[in-house]
Length: 161
Figure (cartoon, one colour):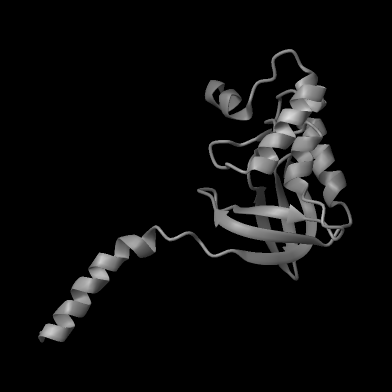
């Protein structure tokens, strides 16, 4: 192997960790919600392809948890009949696309779920100030799940089951 090729091989090995840790590309999907799974997950139909979507930055109540049905219902209402713009930022271990969801009227559904007290700001995966402020306001006004004396965060709920 000549000197040039050796340098190229060494350089590729040095760059591999950088490439592996690079954030995934952001891309958009446009379609309609065809099935609401829970308050933070739904199926999006784009043409003939269905994508499982997980709302970024929020965590909604789990099944059998207080407000889980209300949260799921609200997500369905917000998505109903809408052409949604889904800005995909990542994929999780369950192969769901992590995304910010917008209606045709530019309503940010992720934030709206928090504003209406139907989801927590998921601090483990998001440092978004808008979502943090939305949760603080919903807590202060005791909206939705914040009307409970001691709401249990979904991540704590999951540890118990």
